[in-house]
Image (tube, rainbow, N blue to C red; front, side, top):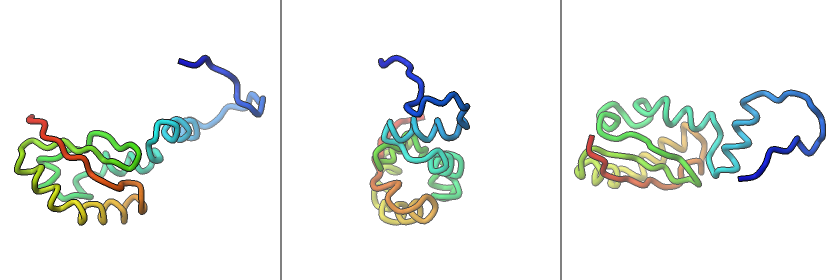
Length: 108
């Protein structure tokens, strides 16, 4: 783990927390905090209530959205709907934020 260092600009001006979160997110290969909030906060409206009842987003990193489903049938269904879901996510978040889905069965 690295040690804390002041910013390279050398100024001691406080920064907005959102700016710091954006920087940390990018360094971890994650999208903007707005995109994360949209995926995790608006999941039902993005994928529909029926899908959302059986599938939950787990992680979004390097363009891969990991989704946990409660039954293998739903894993198959999401893989079949992948192009449609990617199109919906692209419209809501911007193209390229979610590039692929990684669906895993995690019984509730």
